Image 1 (cartoon, rainbow, N blue to C red):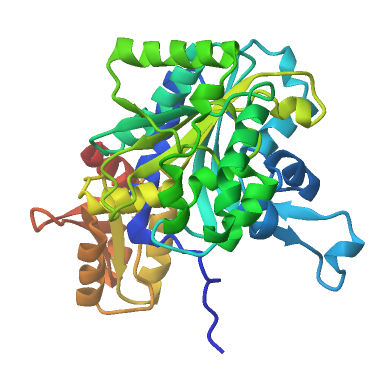
Image 2 (tube, rainbow, N blue to C red):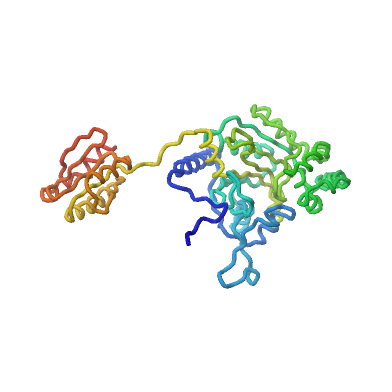
Length: 426
């Protein structure tokens, strides 16, 4: 039997690693330039954390979580655990558990790692997803919304994605949202027979999710549907107006999208997406985020306003490839050691150990191949130098050093080899 990776989970092959290194290095540098610190929450959390924070009527809540059991012990007989389907709930759990409210506010955090969702796989959307996530905790100021939006914008800009713009909306707050939800239900009730089954269920459980429907019949009805901005309370309206003023002041292009909602229940006020040159067909939305002022209180903490976003690294890598964004290759071996004979092989192993101890990247083909095959290996590896060890070199205590670019050779005493190469590779 030949095993394969689970459906919707993708291996990151060596040829893709330069993109990953570039994305992670650039995103961490960007986050630090904004004053964000790294937090790595655990990969597996209590299922209740997600059920409580995400809310009913979302696909994650209803059918996408990976619940974890122990072999031979049914999950229902245990305290259930789940692979995290998103970062924010775990970050807020860590914030409460470790008393991070005592730190300077707003607290700025970012995370990198995997999340897991059992959804239908498609290009750039997998079941094991790598994400960059950022949260700013402890302030209601719309300027913090802007900061998070600019961090999301920068995540794509520093990785070569062009033509960026924002889609923005407000989803209100617990004071003004109920009136809008009631109006939305009243508008759709005469048309329920035209709605897809999932949308009918969402209309009952979580009506805002209907706005995000991809069904054509629902989409045809949304043009005349009530708009949340008409139902905002004074606080939410002032917050959204101030945010738009900041966007206007710095000249960032944006569109007010009345259908824009986020898929999780904890969002309040600002929601946004970054759109741009995706290079992946019609998928223009690159990432999304927004404000979730009631989440920490929902998890048992004091009222603590927060705002954040998450962006997929897998999808960004595919976008960069589609747009032919150039990235630096990973460092190649600097030195390959070639040998002939048992004594020379032992000397090669000793030389490799000395070179690595000196901080050089050194390797060998091994397998006792001929010199020509070992030279081909060195050439493919991109090594700057090939060291040649045979019976004569071992007897004389020297190493033949071949400069691969110049096709020139010289002999160097074994004890001076590391210094000789270090000086030339500096």
